[in-house]
Image (tube, rainbow, N blue to C red; front, side, top):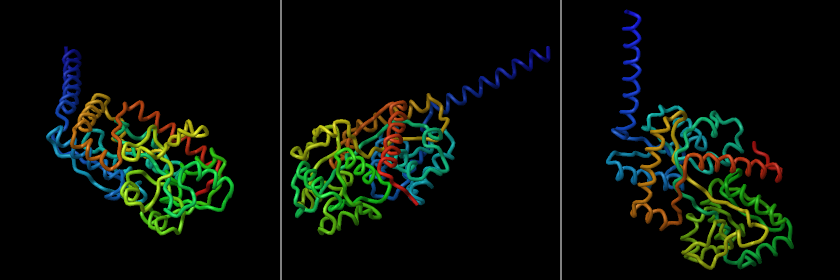
Length: 326
């Protein structure tokens, strides 16, 4: 009789535990949610992070608060996300940097980007663009290709730094097009752009959103945009896939919503659905698209596949270009 009573009690406890878990998921979010942005305020991750935080706050009626943790190239922020409870109250912004280029540059990260996080959904993408100082001899991409091919190693391009998306993407493009250029890395695209505008370095590759105003003001001229279709605000600027050698070329920064590993699938789906609705809000969509970002959502599976594809692509670029990192 005692054995039977104990078994019933155990079953009740298990049932209560499951009910508690389900209740916690059903009530999410019932208190403030922290959204960790592993980079400094003002950059792409922060712009998208604050937009989705505002959208989720409006959508759920609960505060989503952004916490910027830019130390150690984003590692500190990623560690906080990795170490948090998978209860939905600490989420983070993932990116093509944290989940694509960074693991290739730093093979000793204190976490595994493919195993230690819960992928929820993509949020937005921003194309990369190649721009040139106004006095540069080439006025369009084909002229640029012809000029560089005829003068291997003569011309230089600037990027926001060694191992960045711009650096890897440009090396990939140069390899595909049979071109050689000198890489001039900067500690951020801001200083690189100053020197390109001044004519110190002729060419810059960076994200489109950061270049929009400079293009409009004629401080730089766009040569080509790496995106799936032409950009509405600059319809005369070609995209890379219009050129035969670059039919399969894709280069864009992307931002995503992530959580700690081992998040319950039901909670993961609830957060994904809330984020999708938040991005559908007109004020959020207009806020991002007006400055060059493109809303893009996905399933967790699609996001995981994208990470695997990016990692393979950039590892191949590093190998083919014989790139080394300290």
